[in-house]
Length: 214
Image (cartoon, one colour):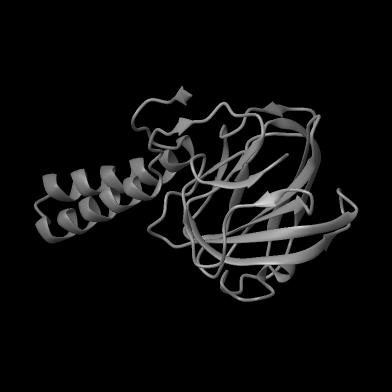
């Protein structure tokens, strides 16, 4: 098991958190208590959004973990033609604004494919959001399987962040980016993988095992 430090804040949150808390301080000094309280509360909420709680990551080389916290809204047969070029099982995870938005690698491997797709911002729960919305598309390969996942924006989320590039190697459960203010994650797995989650399940990034490679 790999254990991370108990709590941290995603660096991407700093450009938002610092100005908001600074404004709260200035308003407090100037005597605008109501405004100071409002921006202080807003700052705390933003800090909570960008929270990165520590996780204990399994070292089992045969498991695939959830890349995000949220609720499974679909487990369906699909076909992935960009990178895997095969029939797959697609697991769709919806993240509300209250979920941890740090994303993690489902299974160790090398980034072999990356693409950014412009698109719409329909609600992430929409059946076709994974086809319509703006997104990052990442393909990973290791000695066991090839798989792909999509960081998809939503109605509120307007930015997805992938801190990697083709050729980078990530460990299972390693942090790789985040989605800002509610969104969706879709994972495409080979049909040979045993799927261990179903629609309606609540999952945690880096902890919940969503699939197993025999």
